[in-house]
Length: 189
Length: 222
Image 1 (cartoon, chains in turn red, orange):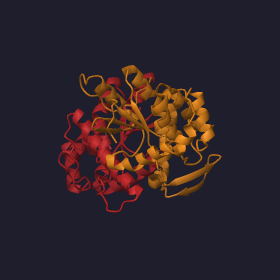
Image 2: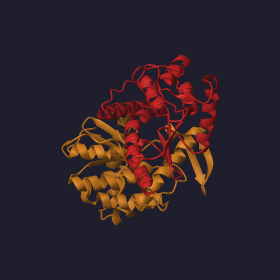
Image 3: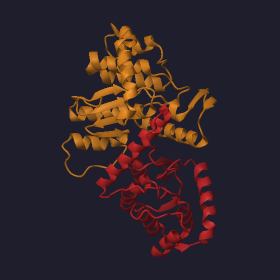
Image 4: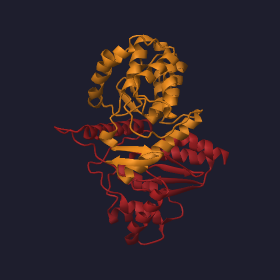
């Protein structure tokens, strides 16, 4: 069993989908998809008087964004960041409540955020994603924020620190760069 | 700063666990391609962006400016670097304080200027024992011993570390952020500034003629 944690507003999680799905298809592995709320930050503006720490955070954020765009191009994705990164809590909470195959809902949510820049914290948007993906829900949309908080607490207690995160054979891997090792473990199981 | 006659500039820091686990794969790529990379030191100012901490016997005895989330991320990063180090047959123990790695990093400049062919040996003399907690890298005699062990002549090193080498090292530091560099290992490949060894597949592809589709990021495993 492979467990994958993701957040729809995370560019790293978005870009991990294609290689992760390719791996799952190669190995025919049972996969559990779970929500994990990440902290995504805009690239800070250049300040007149920056501390070294502020400068570091600005340069790091700009670099991470540039690299995400670069590798997205390799996947044929025109990665455009929304002006307002917003929140994805409601859509993530809904993910925790999807019964059965969660993949169609996940793909619809990623597309909505990254292609349409939809507000994934808006009930109308999330209801639309549920309808579009024909997802069966275990609970009402009003309850799903509590589900997300419970899932988040459980994930953090379990050692998840970012997305995409993979759990296989009791090992946690954060980032798609680990897929070669994950494949090695999966092949040996 | 980011120009070089070499096809690739590699920035590393002796006190970085990420750099530690990147050294052997990067040296292997250099050998595989039959090229010479331009290795340079970047001495990280860790407390400025990650806060600071001091440990004794594995317990945190002092911590400043670190949230629980930051601690969780740091712990994961160390665990992650450790398991990849173990795959390389290396031991990686968490450091008990944030070391000043200026001296061994000036050592990189010294080796690059005086004994380029001994650079791999110098990395082997410094990195693995430091990460086994066997080296006091703030002691110049310890760094000189590493140079000797690597087969590097140390005549003039002390003066270099105190003079021209120190000046060169210090000149580099304020230039990193304006050039888009913030951590190690960083690979500078033309206009590409790539942080992390996960870019080595791309570097290999780019330096091998860009044949076929560019590869995705990956930590390559032996």
